[in-house]
Amino acid sequence: PQSCRPPLPNFLRQLFLHKASGEDPARSLERNIMPFPLNSNANFDIDDIKSPSDAVGGRKPKNNGEEHPAMPPKKNPAPPDKGSAPEDRQKIRAILPRLDELYPEAHCSLDFRNSLQLLVSTILSAQCTDARVNQVTPSLFRKYSDARAFAEASLDELEEAIRSTGFFRNKARSIQACCRILHERFGGEVPASLEALVQLPGIGRKTANVILGNSFGIPGIVVDTHVGRVTQRLGLTKHKDPEKIEFDLMALVPKDRWVKFCHQIILHGRQICQARKPRCEICPLRPHCDYGQQQA
Image (cartoon, rainbow, N blue to C red; front, top):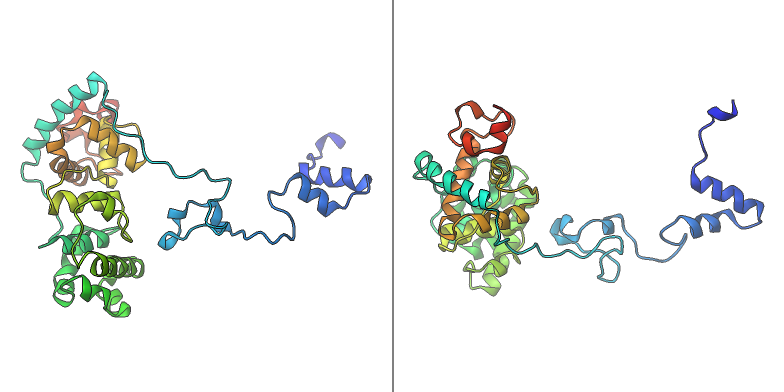
């Protein structure tokens, strides 16, 4: 029956209308619904609709160095909200002493002797346990003792040395590119500033804050998967974006506690507040946890 026929898609309806008027159907399609001219010479690539940071190696769009018009330019995250709600400040004051009781000796679980070793270990720890990284790095650091050694290493040999950490090809390229810049621009030394670190290949805010806090004593909030998950459940942030979580926590946690707080939250996430089956029934933080109160 006529009433049971599905409606024509808009672009087909446009073609039929303009065919009746004598207009070329292809030109009609182009004029009405195509975002780019048919048979044009525009330098367009499907990756252009993604953020440049999503591409391997930071590949940028091909539109003469400009972002695709459909993608707004990347904005810097909002600064910390100094006006945190009183109940949030009260909650963090209750949580910090409990964390000190639970994890008084919390520290970085990666084994390292200098800032370069920590940088390499942190890159290797992506999608890999710290325990596995600690099994790989002793022989790795004996073979490659400084930034120049990593920069000049055979890529195949470096990949094989870190294979068990997963994603070893991407990690090897990041380590080598990063160490090449350290050797050429910084005399083989790891810079002690967030701005310089995040310019290095494979180094984002999380890795930079790990290095600054644990190697240079410069406070920073490290938002890994555990910190993000646990602080969301506690109700210390409503965001999912790591940078926004970072700034929420900076506004709540005293600066001199930033590094230790993150180590403690990471341990809590591994031991109690696990991703799939959080152990709310035994969690000492449950009285202060939004998620835990919902499970009561």
